Amino acid sequence: MKNLELSIENVFPFIPKETLDDYAELTRYHTKHLHQRTGRGANFLGWLDLPSSITEESLKEIEDVATELNKKIEVMVVVGIGGSYLGAKAVIDALSHSFGMFINGRPYPKIIFAGQNISEDFTGELVEFLDKKSYAITVISKSGTTTEPAIAFRILRNHLEKKYGPEEAGRRIVAITSAGRGALKKVADEKGYRTFIIPDDVGGRYSLLTPVGMLPIAQAGFDIRQLVAGAKKMEEMTRPGTPFWENPSALYAAARNSLYRQSPKTEILASYHPKLVYLAEWWKQLYGESEGKEKKGIFPASVNFTADLHSMGQYIQEGQRNLFETVISILEPTRRVIIPEEEDDGDGLNFLAGKSIEDVNKMAELGTMLAHVDGGVPNILIKLPKLSEYYLGQLMYFFQKACAISGYLMNVNPFDQPGVEAYKNNMFALLRKPGFEDESELIYKRINDGN
Ligand code: PA5
Image (spheres, rainbow, N blue to C red):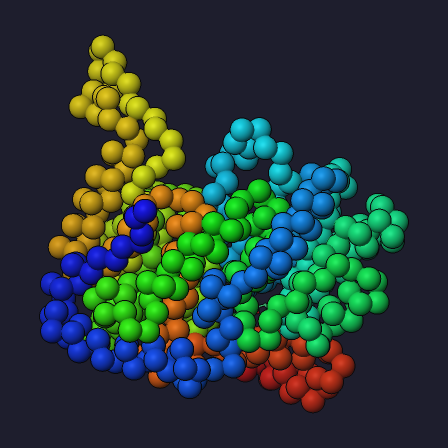
Protein backbone atom coordinates (compact mmCIF):
# COMPACT_ATOMS: atom_id res chain seq x y z
CA MET A 1 0.00 0.00 0.00
CA LYS A 2 1.29 3.44 -0.90
CA ASN A 3 1.78 6.17 1.68
CA LEU A 4 1.82 9.96 1.79
CA GLU A 5 5.00 11.29 0.23
CA LEU A 6 6.69 14.62 0.69
CA SER A 7 8.85 16.26 -1.96
CA ILE A 8 10.97 19.29 -1.17
CA GLU A 9 12.91 19.33 -4.46
CA ASN A 10 11.52 22.79 -5.22
CA VAL A 11 12.78 24.19 -1.96
CA PHE A 12 16.40 23.55 -2.98
CA PRO A 13 16.60 26.38 -5.54
CA PHE A 14 16.06 28.67 -2.53
CA ILE A 15 17.66 26.82 0.41
CA PRO A 16 20.83 24.74 -0.03
CA LYS A 17 20.38 21.05 0.77
CA GLU A 18 23.16 21.31 3.39
CA THR A 19 20.99 23.74 5.37
CA LEU A 20 18.28 21.11 5.48
CA ASP A 21 20.85 18.52 6.57
CA ASP A 22 21.51 20.70 9.62
CA TYR A 23 17.90 20.16 10.66
CA ALA A 24 18.38 16.41 11.05
CA GLU A 25 19.84 16.81 14.52
CA LEU A 26 17.48 19.62 15.51
CA THR A 27 14.31 17.76 14.55
CA ARG A 28 15.63 14.59 16.19
CA TYR A 29 16.13 16.58 19.39
CA HIS A 30 12.63 18.10 19.30
CA THR A 31 10.95 14.81 18.35
CA LYS A 32 12.67 13.20 21.33
CA HIS A 33 11.38 15.91 23.68
CA LEU A 34 7.93 15.64 22.17
CA HIS A 35 7.75 11.90 22.79
CA GLN A 36 9.44 12.05 26.19
CA ARG A 37 6.97 14.80 27.10
CA THR A 38 9.74 17.12 28.22
CA GLY A 39 9.08 20.01 25.80
CA ARG A 40 6.75 22.99 26.08
CA GLY A 41 3.05 22.24 26.55
CA ALA A 42 3.84 18.67 27.59
CA ASN A 43 0.44 18.37 29.30
CA PHE A 44 -1.25 18.47 25.91
CA LEU A 45 0.37 15.54 24.16
CA GLY A 46 -2.43 13.01 24.48
CA TRP A 47 -2.96 13.14 20.68
CA LEU A 48 0.57 11.91 19.98
CA ASP A 49 -0.10 8.19 20.47
CA LEU A 50 -3.87 8.33 20.11
CA PRO A 51 -3.90 6.35 16.83
CA SER A 52 -2.08 3.38 18.37
CA SER A 53 -3.78 3.56 21.75
CA ILE A 54 -7.41 4.06 20.83
CA THR A 55 -9.46 1.11 22.09
CA GLU A 56 -11.92 -1.13 20.26
CA GLU A 57 -14.43 -0.29 22.99
CA SER A 58 -14.28 3.47 22.37
CA LEU A 59 -14.55 3.04 18.58
CA LYS A 60 -17.54 0.77 19.01
CA GLU A 61 -19.25 3.18 21.39
CA ILE A 62 -18.93 6.00 18.84
CA GLU A 63 -20.22 3.78 16.01
CA ASP A 64 -23.14 2.56 18.10
CA VAL A 65 -24.27 6.05 19.07
CA ALA A 66 -23.96 7.19 15.44
CA THR A 67 -26.02 4.23 14.20
CA GLU A 68 -28.71 4.69 16.82
CA LEU A 69 -29.11 8.44 16.23
CA ASN A 70 -28.98 8.07 12.46
CA LYS A 71 -32.08 5.85 12.52
CA LYS A 72 -34.33 8.73 13.40
CA ILE A 73 -32.87 11.86 11.84
CA GLU A 74 -32.44 13.58 8.50
CA VAL A 75 -30.06 16.23 9.82
CA MET A 76 -27.36 16.23 12.47
CA VAL A 77 -26.40 19.67 13.75
CA VAL A 78 -22.87 19.73 15.10
CA VAL A 79 -22.40 22.74 17.37
CA GLY A 80 -18.79 23.77 17.97
CA ILE A 81 -16.08 26.21 16.97
CA GLY A 82 -12.36 26.03 16.08
CA GLY A 83 -10.89 22.66 16.96
CA SER A 84 -14.34 21.52 18.04
CA TYR A 85 -15.59 21.40 14.45
CA LEU A 86 -12.93 21.96 11.80
CA GLY A 87 -11.44 18.43 11.80
CA ALA A 88 -14.80 16.75 11.30
CA LYS A 89 -15.88 19.31 8.70
CA ALA A 90 -12.59 18.85 6.80
CA VAL A 91 -12.93 15.06 6.62
CA ILE A 92 -16.66 15.04 5.85
CA ASP A 93 -16.28 17.61 3.04
CA ALA A 94 -13.27 15.81 1.59
CA LEU A 95 -15.11 12.49 1.39
CA SER A 96 -18.67 13.54 0.62
CA HIS A 97 -20.26 13.71 -2.80
CA SER A 98 -19.92 17.29 -4.04
CA PHE A 99 -23.65 17.56 -4.63
CA GLY A 100 -24.87 15.65 -1.60
CA MET A 101 -25.68 12.36 -3.35
CA PHE A 102 -25.21 9.15 -1.40
CA ILE A 103 -22.98 6.58 -2.98
CA ASN A 104 -24.79 3.24 -3.35
CA GLY A 105 -27.88 5.00 -2.00
CA ARG A 106 -26.62 4.80 1.61
CA PRO A 107 -28.89 7.02 3.64
CA TYR A 108 -26.88 9.04 6.10
CA PRO A 109 -28.05 12.28 7.70
CA LYS A 110 -26.88 15.58 6.35
CA ILE A 111 -24.26 16.91 8.77
CA ILE A 112 -24.41 20.65 9.27
CA PHE A 113 -22.28 22.81 11.52
CA ALA A 114 -23.38 25.65 13.78
CA GLY A 115 -22.02 27.63 16.70
CA GLN A 116 -18.98 28.71 14.69
CA ASN A 117 -20.30 32.26 14.28
CA ILE A 118 -22.68 34.70 15.95
CA SER A 119 -24.47 35.74 12.80
CA GLU A 120 -28.14 36.37 13.40
CA ASP A 121 -29.05 35.64 9.78
CA PHE A 122 -27.20 32.31 9.88
CA THR A 123 -28.90 31.32 13.13
CA GLY A 124 -32.35 32.47 12.04
CA GLU A 125 -32.07 30.64 8.72
CA LEU A 126 -30.81 27.52 10.51
CA VAL A 127 -33.88 27.49 12.75
CA GLU A 128 -36.14 27.96 9.70
CA PHE A 129 -34.40 25.02 8.02
CA LEU A 130 -34.64 22.79 11.10
CA ASP A 131 -38.35 23.58 11.54
CA LYS A 132 -39.02 21.21 8.67
CA LYS A 133 -36.43 18.52 9.47
CA SER A 134 -36.07 15.64 11.85
CA TYR A 135 -32.84 16.42 13.59
CA ALA A 136 -30.52 15.90 16.54
CA ILE A 137 -27.69 17.92 18.06
CA THR A 138 -24.11 17.05 18.90
CA VAL A 139 -22.71 19.87 20.97
CA ILE A 140 -18.93 20.00 21.30
CA SER A 141 -16.94 22.25 23.60
CA LYS A 142 -13.93 21.13 25.57
CA SER A 143 -14.03 24.08 27.93
CA GLY A 144 -17.81 23.98 27.96
CA THR A 145 -17.85 27.77 28.19
CA THR A 146 -17.15 29.06 24.68
CA THR A 147 -19.68 31.78 23.88
CA GLU A 148 -20.44 31.09 20.21
CA PRO A 149 -21.43 27.40 20.59
CA ALA A 150 -23.07 28.10 23.95
CA ILE A 151 -25.45 30.64 22.35
CA ALA A 152 -26.21 28.37 19.39
CA PHE A 153 -26.80 25.42 21.70
CA ARG A 154 -29.17 27.34 23.92
CA ILE A 155 -31.24 28.40 20.89
CA LEU A 156 -31.24 24.97 19.26
CA ARG A 157 -31.91 23.13 22.52
CA ASN A 158 -34.97 25.31 23.06
CA HIS A 159 -36.10 24.66 19.50
CA LEU A 160 -35.59 20.91 19.87
CA GLU A 161 -37.44 20.79 23.20
CA LYS A 162 -40.39 22.68 21.71
CA LYS A 163 -40.44 20.39 18.69
CA TYR A 164 -40.14 17.02 20.45
CA GLY A 165 -40.76 17.71 24.14
CA PRO A 166 -37.95 17.73 26.74
CA GLU A 167 -37.63 13.96 27.04
CA GLU A 168 -37.24 13.10 23.36
CA ALA A 169 -35.09 16.23 22.91
CA GLY A 170 -32.80 14.87 25.64
CA ARG A 171 -32.44 11.61 23.70
CA ARG A 172 -31.51 13.59 20.60
CA ILE A 173 -28.65 15.52 22.20
CA VAL A 174 -25.09 14.30 22.59
CA ALA A 175 -22.57 16.41 24.52
CA ILE A 176 -18.84 16.13 23.94
CA THR A 177 -16.87 17.99 26.57
CA SER A 178 -14.20 17.63 29.25
CA ALA A 179 -14.77 15.59 32.37
CA GLY A 180 -14.59 17.91 35.25
CA ARG A 181 -15.48 21.47 34.31
CA GLY A 182 -17.55 23.86 32.28
CA ALA A 183 -21.20 24.76 31.97
CA LEU A 184 -21.79 22.20 29.23
CA LYS A 185 -20.90 19.26 31.49
CA LYS A 186 -23.18 20.68 34.16
CA VAL A 187 -26.14 21.03 31.75
CA ALA A 188 -25.44 17.58 30.25
CA ASP A 189 -25.40 15.96 33.71
CA GLU A 190 -28.54 17.76 34.83
CA LYS A 191 -30.47 16.89 31.68
CA GLY A 192 -29.04 13.39 31.37
CA TYR A 193 -27.59 13.83 27.87
CA ARG A 194 -25.41 11.11 26.46
CA THR A 195 -21.87 12.43 26.98
CA PHE A 196 -18.47 11.69 25.51
CA ILE A 197 -15.42 12.96 27.36
CA ILE A 198 -12.56 14.81 25.64
CA PRO A 199 -9.28 13.82 27.32
CA ASP A 200 -7.76 16.72 29.26
CA ASP A 201 -4.42 16.24 27.51
CA VAL A 202 -5.80 16.70 23.96
CA GLY A 203 -6.26 20.30 22.79
CA GLY A 204 -9.10 21.28 20.44
CA ARG A 205 -7.11 21.50 17.21
CA TYR A 206 -5.45 18.13 17.89
CA SER A 207 -8.73 16.37 18.75
CA LEU A 208 -9.71 14.81 15.40
CA LEU A 209 -9.27 11.24 16.68
CA THR A 210 -11.38 11.77 19.80
CA PRO A 211 -15.20 11.74 19.70
CA VAL A 212 -14.93 15.44 18.71
CA GLY A 213 -14.00 14.45 15.17
CA MET A 214 -15.03 10.83 15.08
CA LEU A 215 -18.71 11.01 16.05
CA PRO A 216 -19.71 13.47 13.29
CA ILE A 217 -17.55 11.57 10.78
CA ALA A 218 -19.17 8.25 11.75
CA GLN A 219 -22.60 9.87 11.51
CA ALA A 220 -21.82 11.03 8.00
CA GLY A 221 -21.25 7.36 7.12
CA PHE A 222 -17.47 7.33 6.91
CA ASP A 223 -15.15 4.66 8.28
CA ILE A 224 -13.50 5.97 11.44
CA ARG A 225 -11.46 2.77 11.75
CA GLN A 226 -9.74 3.52 8.44
CA LEU A 227 -9.12 7.09 9.58
CA VAL A 228 -7.42 5.75 12.70
CA ALA A 229 -5.53 3.11 10.69
CA GLY A 230 -4.11 5.82 8.41
CA ALA A 231 -3.11 7.99 11.37
CA LYS A 232 -1.51 4.95 13.00
CA LYS A 233 0.58 4.31 9.91
CA MET A 234 1.77 7.93 10.04
CA GLU A 235 2.48 7.60 13.76
CA GLU A 236 4.83 4.72 12.81
CA MET A 237 6.34 6.64 9.89
CA THR A 238 7.23 9.61 12.12
CA ARG A 239 8.24 7.87 15.33
CA PRO A 240 11.49 8.82 17.08
CA GLY A 241 14.45 7.15 15.48
CA THR A 242 13.11 7.46 11.92
CA PRO A 243 15.94 8.87 9.77
CA PHE A 244 15.36 12.56 9.04
CA TRP A 245 15.09 12.21 5.25
CA GLU A 246 12.50 9.44 5.67
CA ASN A 247 10.36 11.23 8.26
CA PRO A 248 7.82 13.39 6.37
CA SER A 249 6.75 15.41 9.42
CA ALA A 250 10.32 16.27 10.42
CA LEU A 251 11.18 17.14 6.82
CA TYR A 252 8.13 19.38 6.36
CA ALA A 253 8.81 21.14 9.68
CA ALA A 254 12.45 21.63 8.68
CA ALA A 255 11.69 22.89 5.16
CA ARG A 256 9.15 25.47 6.32
CA ASN A 257 11.34 26.57 9.22
CA SER A 258 14.38 27.03 6.99
CA LEU A 259 12.30 29.12 4.58
CA TYR A 260 10.87 31.19 7.45
CA ARG A 261 14.36 31.91 8.74
CA GLN A 262 15.51 32.99 5.30
CA SER A 263 12.60 35.34 4.58
CA PRO A 264 9.15 33.99 3.65
CA LYS A 265 6.64 34.66 6.40
CA THR A 266 3.53 33.35 4.63
CA GLU A 267 2.76 29.77 3.69
CA ILE A 268 -0.01 29.17 1.17
CA LEU A 269 -1.62 25.76 1.24
CA ALA A 270 -2.87 24.98 -2.25
CA SER A 271 -4.96 22.16 -3.60
CA TYR A 272 -6.68 21.49 -6.88
CA HIS A 273 -9.82 19.99 -5.37
CA PRO A 274 -12.80 22.03 -4.11
CA LYS A 275 -13.47 19.26 -1.57
CA LEU A 276 -10.35 20.29 0.29
CA VAL A 277 -11.36 23.87 1.13
CA TYR A 278 -12.13 22.93 4.73
CA LEU A 279 -9.05 20.77 5.05
CA ALA A 280 -7.18 24.02 4.45
CA GLU A 281 -9.31 25.77 7.07
CA TRP A 282 -8.44 23.03 9.57
CA TRP A 283 -4.74 23.34 8.64
CA LYS A 284 -4.86 27.15 9.01
CA GLN A 285 -6.21 26.85 12.52
CA LEU A 286 -3.67 24.15 13.41
CA TYR A 287 -0.68 26.19 12.29
CA GLY A 288 -2.03 29.67 13.03
CA GLU A 289 -2.99 28.94 16.62
CA SER A 290 0.03 26.76 17.28
CA GLU A 291 2.78 29.01 15.92
CA GLY A 292 1.43 32.54 15.88
CA LYS A 293 2.63 33.85 19.22
CA GLU A 294 5.46 35.77 20.87
CA LYS A 295 5.63 37.87 17.66
CA LYS A 296 6.65 34.77 15.70
CA GLY A 297 5.03 32.40 13.24
CA ILE A 298 4.41 31.71 9.58
CA PHE A 299 1.07 33.16 8.47
CA PRO A 300 -1.02 30.28 7.10
CA ALA A 301 -3.08 31.15 4.04
CA SER A 302 -4.84 28.94 1.52
CA VAL A 303 -5.99 28.85 -2.07
CA ASN A 304 -8.12 26.45 -4.06
CA PHE A 305 -6.91 26.04 -7.64
CA THR A 306 -7.62 26.36 -10.43
CA ALA A 307 -10.41 28.73 -9.29
CA ASP A 308 -8.03 30.93 -7.33
CA LEU A 309 -5.49 31.05 -10.15
CA HIS A 310 -7.97 33.53 -11.61
CA SER A 311 -7.99 35.65 -8.47
CA MET A 312 -4.87 35.07 -6.34
CA GLY A 313 -2.66 33.62 -9.07
CA GLN A 314 -1.38 37.03 -10.15
CA TYR A 315 -0.18 37.91 -6.65
CA ILE A 316 1.48 34.56 -6.09
CA GLN A 317 3.26 34.81 -9.45
CA GLU A 318 4.44 38.41 -9.26
CA GLY A 319 3.55 40.02 -5.94
CA GLN A 320 5.77 40.54 -2.90
CA ARG A 321 8.26 37.67 -2.61
CA ASN A 322 7.63 36.76 1.01
CA LEU A 323 5.74 33.52 0.57
CA PHE A 324 6.09 29.84 -0.13
CA GLU A 325 3.56 27.31 -1.31
CA THR A 326 2.65 23.86 -0.04
CA VAL A 327 0.61 21.83 -2.51
CA ILE A 328 -1.55 18.85 -1.58
CA SER A 329 -1.60 16.70 -4.68
CA ILE A 330 -4.13 13.86 -4.89
CA LEU A 331 -2.66 11.21 -7.18
CA GLU A 332 -5.80 9.26 -8.09
CA PRO A 333 -9.29 10.66 -8.59
CA THR A 334 -12.34 8.61 -7.61
CA ARG A 335 -14.18 9.38 -10.86
CA ARG A 336 -13.22 9.42 -14.52
CA VAL A 337 -14.76 11.98 -16.84
CA ILE A 338 -13.46 12.01 -20.42
CA ILE A 339 -13.49 15.11 -22.62
CA PRO A 340 -15.41 14.21 -25.79
CA GLU A 341 -14.26 14.78 -29.36
CA GLU A 342 -16.42 17.06 -31.54
CA GLU A 343 -16.36 17.02 -35.30
CA ASP A 344 -16.38 20.75 -35.93
CA ASP A 345 -14.04 21.57 -33.00
CA GLY A 346 -15.72 24.97 -32.70
CA ASP A 347 -14.29 25.59 -29.24
CA GLY A 348 -10.82 24.38 -30.28
CA LEU A 349 -10.71 21.77 -27.55
CA ASN A 350 -10.14 18.67 -29.67
CA PHE A 351 -6.48 18.65 -28.59
CA LEU A 352 -7.88 17.52 -25.22
CA ALA A 353 -10.35 14.97 -26.59
CA GLY A 354 -9.94 11.56 -24.99
CA LYS A 355 -8.15 12.97 -21.96
CA SER A 356 -9.78 12.87 -18.56
CA ILE A 357 -10.51 16.05 -16.60
CA GLU A 358 -7.86 14.96 -14.11
CA ASP A 359 -5.23 14.76 -16.90
CA VAL A 360 -5.86 18.46 -17.46
CA ASN A 361 -5.99 19.27 -13.74
CA LYS A 362 -2.64 17.54 -13.23
CA MET A 363 -1.02 19.56 -16.01
CA ALA A 364 -2.46 22.73 -14.49
CA GLU A 365 -0.90 21.66 -11.19
CA LEU A 366 2.50 20.92 -12.72
CA GLY A 367 2.49 24.02 -14.90
CA THR A 368 1.53 26.24 -11.98
CA MET A 369 4.18 24.78 -9.72
CA LEU A 370 6.91 25.38 -12.31
CA ALA A 371 5.65 28.91 -12.97
CA HIS A 372 5.52 29.77 -9.26
CA VAL A 373 9.00 28.34 -8.62
CA ASP A 374 10.29 30.36 -11.60
CA GLY A 375 8.54 33.39 -10.09
CA GLY A 376 10.46 32.97 -6.82
CA VAL A 377 7.97 30.95 -4.75
CA PRO A 378 9.51 27.89 -3.07
CA ASN A 379 7.31 24.81 -3.27
CA ILE A 380 6.69 21.89 -0.94
CA LEU A 381 4.72 19.02 -2.45
CA ILE A 382 2.60 16.59 -0.45
CA LYS A 383 1.47 13.62 -2.51
CA LEU A 384 -1.55 11.72 -1.25
CA PRO A 385 -2.44 8.49 -3.13
CA LYS A 386 -6.17 9.27 -3.00
CA LEU A 387 -8.93 10.87 -1.00
CA SER A 388 -10.04 8.24 1.49
CA GLU A 389 -10.45 7.91 5.23
CA TYR A 390 -7.12 6.06 5.43
CA TYR A 391 -5.11 8.71 3.62
CA LEU A 392 -6.83 11.61 5.37
CA GLY A 393 -5.81 9.92 8.63
CA GLN A 394 -2.21 9.86 7.37
CA LEU A 395 -2.35 13.45 6.15
CA MET A 396 -3.89 14.97 9.26
CA TYR A 397 -1.62 13.15 11.70
CA PHE A 398 1.35 14.14 9.49
CA PHE A 399 0.33 17.80 9.78
CA GLN A 400 -0.22 17.59 13.53
CA LYS A 401 3.16 16.00 14.19
CA ALA A 402 4.91 18.47 11.89
CA CYS A 403 3.12 21.34 13.61
CA ALA A 404 4.35 20.26 17.02
CA ILE A 405 7.95 19.99 15.73
CA SER A 406 7.57 23.34 13.93
CA GLY A 407 6.44 25.00 17.15
CA TYR A 408 9.44 23.62 19.01
CA LEU A 409 11.77 24.75 16.20
CA MET A 410 10.32 28.24 16.65
CA ASN A 411 10.63 27.95 20.41
CA VAL A 412 6.94 28.53 21.12
CA ASN A 413 4.41 26.36 22.90
CA PRO A 414 2.39 24.83 20.03
CA PHE A 415 -0.41 23.70 22.33
CA ASP A 416 -1.72 26.90 23.88
CA GLN A 417 -3.59 29.90 22.44
CA PRO A 418 -3.35 32.74 24.99
CA GLY A 419 -4.04 35.42 22.36
CA VAL A 420 -7.58 34.16 21.75
CA GLU A 421 -8.65 35.67 25.09
CA ALA A 422 -8.11 39.30 24.01
CA TYR A 423 -11.23 39.63 21.85
CA LYS A 424 -13.30 37.70 24.37
CA ASN A 425 -12.36 40.07 27.20
CA ASN A 426 -13.34 43.10 25.13
CA MET A 427 -16.57 41.48 23.96
CA PHE A 428 -17.55 40.52 27.51
CA ALA A 429 -16.72 44.02 28.75
CA LEU A 430 -18.81 45.54 25.94
CA LEU A 431 -21.69 43.18 26.73
CA ARG A 432 -21.33 44.02 30.45
CA LYS A 433 -20.91 40.39 31.49
CA PRO A 434 -20.99 40.05 35.28
CA GLY A 435 -17.41 40.06 36.57
CA PHE A 436 -16.23 42.45 33.83
CA GLU A 437 -17.46 45.70 35.42
CA ASP A 438 -14.00 47.36 35.62
CA GLU A 439 -13.14 46.39 32.04
CA SER A 440 -16.57 47.68 30.90
CA GLU A 441 -15.96 51.06 32.41
CA LEU A 442 -12.52 51.30 30.81
CA ILE A 443 -13.56 50.14 27.37
CA TYR A 444 -16.59 52.46 27.18
CA LYS A 445 -14.42 55.36 28.34
CA ARG A 446 -11.91 54.49 25.61
CA ILE A 447 -14.67 54.39 22.98
CA ASN A 448 -16.22 57.68 24.17
CA ASP A 449 -12.79 59.34 24.19
CA GLY A 450 -12.37 58.23 20.58
CA ASN A 451 -9.26 56.07 21.04
O1 PA5 B 1 -7.65 24.50 19.37
C1 PA5 B 1 -8.28 24.99 20.30
O2 PA5 B 1 -8.05 24.66 21.47
C2 PA5 B 1 -9.38 25.99 20.06
O3 PA5 B 1 -9.50 26.31 18.74
C3 PA5 B 1 -10.70 25.44 20.55
O4 PA5 B 1 -10.97 24.23 19.89
C4 PA5 B 1 -11.84 26.42 20.32
O5 PA5 B 1 -11.55 27.64 20.88
C5 PA5 B 1 -13.13 25.87 20.92
O6 PA5 B 1 -12.96 25.65 22.29
P1 PA5 B 1 -13.96 24.76 23.10
O7 PA5 B 1 -13.93 23.38 22.57
O8 PA5 B 1 -13.47 24.82 24.50
O9 PA5 B 1 -15.33 25.37 22.96
